[in-house]
Image (cartoon, rainbow, N blue to C red):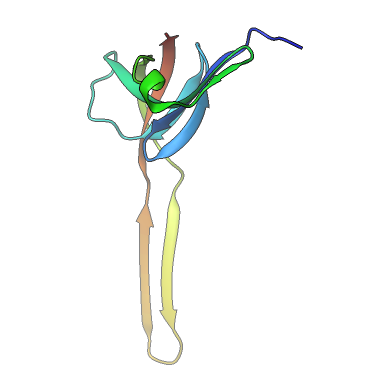
Length: 106
């Protein structure tokens, strides 16, 4: 069973993501501006039946993507409470994210 599926496992924002051409991925905030082109580091490439994991061969592979948008993650509420002392502390956090669209795997 042969297939013409081409996808790559890339390192993006401290995590690994499975991407193919046209996929939109949400990663941690990138310093690049919206509309700029970036290159993601491939860890594995699947091209049909051929699976490439060799570090030397992956050095020749490029995964190009474009920064589409910036976003914020969901609100996280942090509440600390200690009984009988009157200690209460509230804190919130929203992670800054970047939306990236994969344009080319070569």
